[in-house]
Image (cartoon, rainbow, N blue to C red):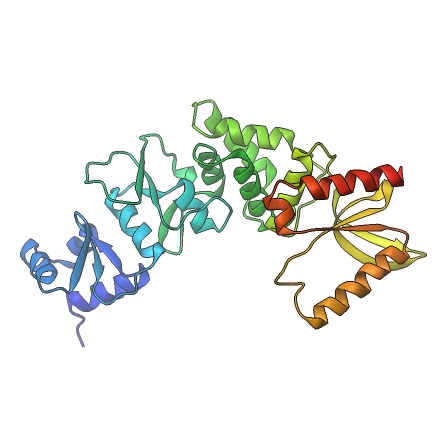
Length: 307
């Protein structure tokens, strides 16, 4: 049975979060009159000039973003905060459609942020889930132009933890694009320059926030993901530690530490750490949100007692 243009378009839209544009319609042979007719009949919903969503298709941030990318022309890509969303790292914002394209000649839309650039190397572009997007290295570099350096640092940590990139790859991107004066290159360069090459990766975004709070309060960075052993027996692996002073730091997630079973487990774990002659200190979201002065004072006192 022969496939009609509408059936072929439906298949295209299904692969593209319900969104399509004029180049797809041209390839399938739709005339200008046919396009107008389908919009008037409510079969297609116009998102931008020459960009449509199939009526009945689920509305999603990916579909909205891909529509904005299509509106940017054949060389448009998701970037900056939208790029961070696509990659799943810190600093993203699903309420925005942030794109990078050579030239924007279309109307402005709420939530749409356009960065114009004619110098977008093919090495800095890839496709994820049908969405053209800047590579993770370029995304992290661009993120430095629109996000606080602490947020960019957490995004870098997340990307390394997810094995999306490596420190050498990030440094190579900074060397290549930093010479061109790219916005954000200075932020990423400082993060990489200040990072201890032997620093272990954290296991969560909250652990990274904890390190940032300790550093902001003048404390030395602890060793992350440290294993405590006592008399040849494994006791626990803690989020962070000052091994020379036998101080263990644990981020206490409400979700992970709620309920009777969790309470029993946590008490047993804490008692085992204390029994190994270590001083355990808990860090909560409230500590991080408030700047950590109280918990850092507790850590300083514990360090003084241990010293």
